[in-house]
Image (cartoon, rainbow, N blue to C red):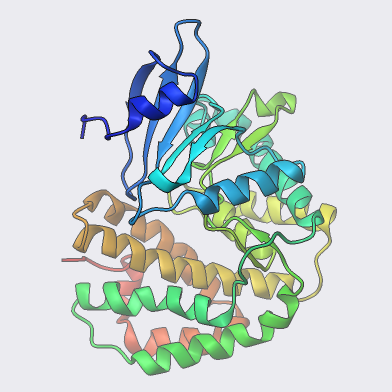
Length: 329
C-alpha cells in the first residue's frame, strides 16, 4: 500500500513538520503503519498511524511515558492525536538488533548482554499502571494453538483437557509474579534498536511495547532468548540467563517458571503464526514455526510442564512434533 492515509499532512502541519519528506516503512502483522519523516534540515522523526477502531495509540503513549519516566529508553513523543491514531516520535534510526547482528555477528554477546541489563533495570522499578498477566490471559493465549494450529494440520484435540493442563502447570507460578514487574511482551531482537555499537556499551532503544502488562520477570527473558525470528544458541541462552540471575537475583523456582512461560509463549506463537497465514494470507510466518516448536519442545521437557507435556503426547502425533509442527494447509 503506497497511498498515504487521510489526515497525514494536516497532522504533520500542526506538529510543525509541514513540508517534510515522507517515506513509508514496510509493515506486516498489524493495522499500524509507520513513516519516516525528514525536514529539509535533515532532522528526522517517526510517524505512527494506529487508526481506530482496529488500533488505539493510547496504550503506546501510556507505556512510552512510563518507561521514559523510569529511566528506560523509549522514543520521545513529539506530537500526538490519539483520537485519529497519529503519533510522532523520536527516530531511533535503522539499526534493529536483529539486522545489526546479521552484519556484526561478533557483537552478539555484547548486544544480548545490553538487552539483559535493560531488563534488569526495568525489573528494579515498581510495576507500571498496567493490567495483570493473569490466568485468563495466559489461557486465552495458549488457546490459539488449539483454535488455529490444530485444525490447520487436521487434528481434533481435547480442548478442555488442554486448558486444564495449562491451568495446573501455571497455577504454582502465579503467586510468584506478585507484585510483579512490567512485562513488555514482545521483547526480542526486532524490537530492540541499537543506538550505537553495543560492543562499546551504547544504549538500546525500546519499541513495540504497547501491550505491556504486569507479570513475571521471566516472560521477557523468554521472548528475548527463545526468539521466534532469530536463532539463539542454547549456550547463549544459558549465559544470558546466568547474567540476569547474577544481576537481578533469581529464586529456586526461576528456572521452572522460565520453562513454564517459554512453553506458554511458544504455544501462543504457533497459534498466532498459523492465524497470520490462514486468516491474513501471510505465509512467511510458517517458516518460523519450526524454530518456535523446537524451543517449546525443550520447555516441555521440564518437569514443571508435566501436565502439558502429557497432553501433547496424547494429542499431537510424534511425527508432527519431530518435524517442527508439520505441514500447515
